[in-house]
Amino acid sequence: MRVFTGIQPSGDLHIGNYFGSIKQMVDAQASSETFAFIANYHAMTSVRDGDRLAKLTMQCATDFLALGIDPNKSTFWIQSDVKEVLELYWILSSFTPMGLLERAHSYKDKTAKGIAANHSLFSYPVLMAADILIFGADVVPVGKDQIQHVEIARDIAIKFNNAYGDIFTIPEFRIQEEIQTVPGIDGQKMSKSYNNVVNIFGQEKEQMKTIKKIVTENVALEEPKEFEGCNVYNMAKLFLQGDELVALQERYKRGGEGHGHFKLYLHEVIWEYFRDFREQRAYFEAHQDEVKEILDRGASKARAVALPMIEKIREVTGLVF
Ligand code: ATP
Ligand code: MG
Image 1 (tube, rainbow, N blue to C red):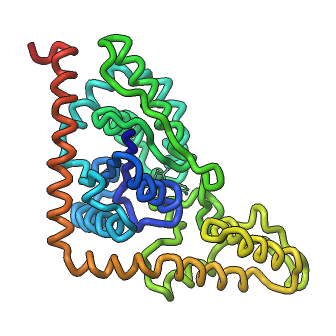
Image 2 (image 1 turned 120 degrees about the horizontal axis):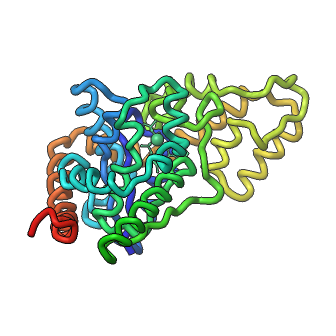
């Protein structure tokens, strides 16, 4: 089974990316064929500064490796190193009804947040379909925000297969029921491009500052507090299990502690969770040439899968004869 993910180098990786996608990929490495890439073409929808995109691409690759993507087990590359996806993107555009894209929530959310409503943002799901389909992905682990995009990829694949025969594998999304959408510090979906993230590899003081800004209910110190729907709790629960989780719930129910306490606790829990990953990150940060070599090797492995597929597509569509 082939499991597949992409992450945009559009900002610092955050705990939503980790639980929505990266952790699922790292865990899948034990039992599946895993493909993970840095979606730099996609990031151009929000990053318009060449130096910044280049820097974020390396940062994202470094973070990914630190978090446990193992290049010996996974195929790990930068999207723009396998340019055939752009050819497929155009081909698939002819199998993408406008209505399908017009209904995309992610486009609406992003334009509502002030991100420019240009064609690349609008047709983002078509490029994502090309990514998924050219590599024959069976399963795509995602957060809730991306379910619809995987469904669009399925629709496009089915339409294409109806026209040309059984070319594409029809992909399925995989979502962790207990995660779905990790809230940002403002209570909306945590997103790199929304400036509301708790990042994974920031400085400790900065992280504490960010966590202090998490929006919470205004309830007197001594009063009991709702944990369901509390942004602090909903972040903390990702890192806690069993007794620890129940203990936190009890603290909310008991009252006598302000949200400030829960925020302090959240910070401690997150900081501890990523301790070993920070050490691994320091290694890759100091060995950027090694990261580049890993990405080059990954691109070769990815091309070996994408090329036969695009050749087959060129043939069946009559582009080569
Ligand atoms: P951008 O703001 O640029 O869209 P993003 O933070 O939404 O960035 P993406 O690169 O678009 O991150 O998505 C990478 C993966 O992380 C996807 O699988 C997506 O579903 C998942 N993901 C992103 N945000 C969240 C979230 N808040 N909760 C759960 N999963 C998430
Ligand atoms: Mg996104």
